[in-house]
Image (cartoon, rainbow, N blue to C red; front, side):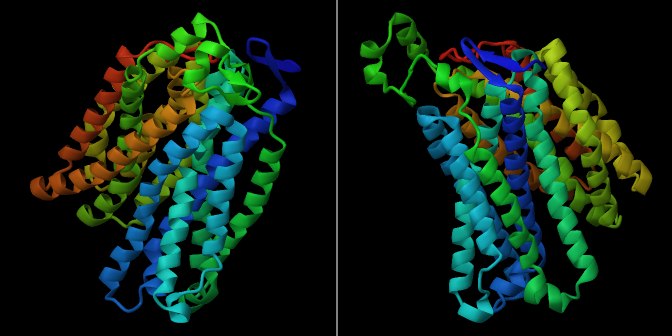
Amino acid sequence: MTDSAPTAPGGTRTTKDLSRAAASGWLGTAMEFMDFQLYSLAAATVFNQLFFPDVSPAIGLIASMATYGVGYVARLAGAVYFGRMGDRIGRKKVLFLTILLMGGSTTLIGVLPTYATIGIAAPVLLVALRLVQGFGAGAEIAGATVMLVEYAPARRRGLIASLVALGTNSGTLAASGLWAVLLAVLSEEQLLSWGWRLPFLLSFALLLLAVWMRAHLKESPVFEERADVVDGVAVARAEVAATAGSGLEAGLRQRKGKAFLLALGLRFGQAGNSGLIQTFLVGYIATNLAVAEAVPTSALVWGSVLGFAVVPAVGVLGDRFGRRPVYLALTALTVVIAVPMMAVIGTGHPVALSAALVLGLNIGVLGLFSVESAAMAELFGARTRLTQLAVAKEIGGTLATAIGPVLAATFTAVTGHWWPIAAMLIAYSLITFVSAYFAPETRGRDLVRLEDAA
């Protein structure tokens, strides 16, 4: 890369600016997934005792996991609110606010009084902080993706945008590692009295770093070059005629919808496969196959480590051959391996099923996430890119990950076999295959254009 990296007509950013944007995007996404993973692990292990002690253990666990689920409700609201804000006043301001909301609420969970101290107010405050955390997270990953895509030189968009996918890996591994250390070195009494607070409080250091980085981050050059942005703010539709010429008006008159539906399809396969491979199969292997839960969990950790090589490699392939061919290849390959992968997992052999999980994770989840980062952002026009991307990610992700494990549990309970899981992996992947087939090729697209690519 040269000293300046062209990103839009008339707009340049230095290598230092690009590096700062890349690091900021990676760190923010890592924080999002670290925060959510910290919460999910705490909800599954200690929150039922700390915040819901007056009910049975089973009901306490359900209530604890329900507080985890409300964050996903808030994510969609955050996607709409911050997406519209980012499209109107800039990406930088939104990314600064989302990181503050996410990191601040996570840190406050670490100092929250428990039920034993303040009674019913404790779970109420826990739910409130979870809602704030989810509200901020709703546009974090989309905002980071848009910022990186709009910063990156066209020939390197796929690679640079893939850092968002690496951030998810980093955050999940960091949270899992922190909890693994706590469980290994602390007694149950120490964990319940003060140890559970440490991961949440340690996240404050990351928050300070992320806030500092984003405070010194320059605005997206694409946003600054938009024809509908005047003095740093997008003009309202009613003002277009008085502000710009017919070219701008034509761009704003484009009917929306097709690109959004294509993006939903592209997202659905990746999120659905993730829900099955990273969530459902862990419990299925332990319960139905009587294999120690540590086996699939360790396999997913090793698969995530391998993802640090796979994700940027897929990004490079997308830059070299285009987004559509990579999408089609990855989804077709997932369809081909779904039945053999589940057949191997069905044997219950620890080494074999671990290898199958690692393969499925990197092809059907992380590989798709890598190419998705650039392709979905490129589908949308500059005026509504952040809103449409955030909402598409949240709707597609929530529907797929909420429905998938429930359906898989139902079908496997009825049939007593693994084939419904394979069928669902195939169905999810075919949805994305069809969406990619009908989607336009977006590699190298001029991101300053206001209209969608489809």
